Amino acid sequence: MGITLLQGGEPLLADRAISKIISNFQGATVTQLIASELELGGITDALAPSLFGDTRIVVIKEIQDLAAELGEEITTYLASEDEGVELVLWHKGGVKGRALVEKIKKVKPTLIACDVIKKDGEKADFIRAEFKRLGRSISTEAVQALIDALGSDIRELGGACSQLAADVLAGKLIDETDVVKFQNGRIETTGFNVADAALDGKREIALIALRNALATGTDPVLITSALAGSLRNLAKVSGASRGMKSFDLAGPLGLAPWQIDKARRQLSKWTPASLAGAVVAVAQADADIKGAAADPIHSLERAIIAITSRV
Image (cartoon, rainbow, N blue to C red; front, side):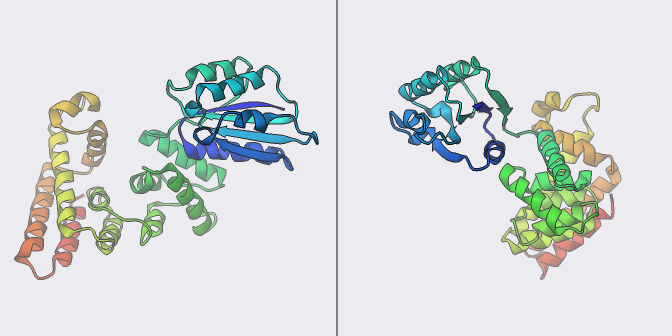
């Protein structure tokens, strides 16, 4: 049958690739092994010829963790492959186990990339590909909202795409409001979610995010802090040259390049006067929360309305 080598540290992509291979060989006997749990002779036993000549799939995950002796068991098999076996090997990347990978590549296996998805652009491409696979369309704003909410966990991000595709009315463009409704009551919303929506002028979404943040235990003080911090970022970036790359500005401004890129995108909707008004609104909300008003939550809502009215 053959050998397939998965390369990269993204578990979701590796699991999907393995599942697809298994589905291609209906009725095959499947053995899945994890390198760190194997003992000497375990791979040889799994790959030994079958008495019944049945089709088999042997999956060995995370081969970078194989002891040298166990790696030699794979090397020995490569010299005399069993035509009834599909061997699937997953290497998570890095220098560990690289020598074994090079030996595997010499027999010209099928290569499947499972690279870790780190950058926001890569996450956005992943989300769009997910919805395309599911036969649905999603707006650019909704893509970013999903990244902001779930971007640290690709598996959860993939699950959210599937759930949204199933829950949102067929044929409808999945938009940011759909994503916010999906989040509501499901995941913890932070003050930064509130701030991002407010500074983008998305009042309804900001207010929903505010209620969700409060419902999941976010301290009101942290919300005003996030709003104030985001406004400070806008002020810092507004005075920087547009011709300079975000990477070059990161050090002087004390911000990460992605924060500078986000601020530049948001600044297109702001003027110095509107920015000053938003700072006053947040300062008032902060004072209210710390004792100047009886209802701090109402003060937060009022501040968000004031901020979004200036965008």
